[in-house]
Length: 505
Image (tube, rainbow, N blue to C red):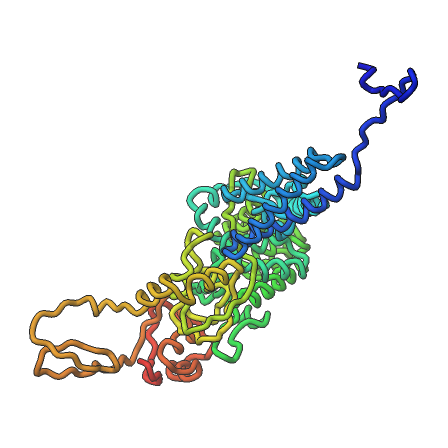
């Protein structure tokens, strides 16, 4: 065995030690750098494919070819540590398998999800420590929130509700939230609030549906009443649009409102939430009368109505699950929410876009995302060609691939033009006449009279003065004056409006 490490020196009988094989650091480091560049391109391509960008397939194929070339060259080059590269390759295979299965994966440029845990932080995936830093930040935020609230049986009961009959609402809230998180998270950070708290409020108030209105007049994802909204810059923006429905403006207002409440209530999340739901005046009076006692103190707790007693723990419970999903076996849906804008090249509507986009990458399709990100457009309003809409990279890619032309675009237009009345089969001697630009079949020898235009309209769920005025072709001020309302007045479901001033009634 020893002789194997020695070589016979020429022309002598003396042996000398063989030089041990020394791996070349330069060969290994060069190959590793090339591998990492190709792997980064591969990961990005996979993520772009997941976003719906079919053009990324070329990038994925080219990256794989480059990775194969690097491995082959390293195996043939003396001193190149192929084992080190194979470890990197194994991690890449894990990434691919997780991506194909739809599991949580971590890419080198994965967006920092903040307090959300839709990504599994795995420090071993990258060597730069970025994922470890993200995991540390997540742990820090969890700990900070835990310190700020009192985890007790009321919170646990709230968690039980969210995880049983309210689990679908929780999942929908999470998915809706991811699309508007780009507005909520910065607002929370600006005002020193836990982002999870903002998620909990939104989940309880609206399930993340931007256009929700209550019978009491509260509106938007954070359900501002008109008067409170005006204090924080929300309301009619002069065009007839109520900015309580705008996710950016309402997120900023909600964060500012909460920060103000916490500032006067000794940084108590529970009391701030009680103020949010039960009235800031009541919360402040109770706080001062109790010498700053905690919300869970009986003398404080019993002074709030039953709705507030339920509201506070339910919001905290939703925030808690948002931060600790795995503890409860919760796997939030993966949401492709990277924001972007896209320009439409022909008139369309949000309804039409929802059909042609399909639901690839989203169980329920993209109607809610489109509505949340474009709150000024009613679902059935015609959006002019050339308009720029807010969306995600996946929505933009699906629009390019399926909504501009092709079979699905044609089918969608056919569906949008279909009218129930055209399915009615009439028997007899008919002639076709034009009535209001619509071909109508009628008995021969008879005339067709245009039915009188309606003079009133009953308000449907979620409608505002703005949406009704758009529907019937009049301005918000005209409609408001005709009904003795202000331009910011909320509407009630079933309320009857005088629409005689409108041209399209």
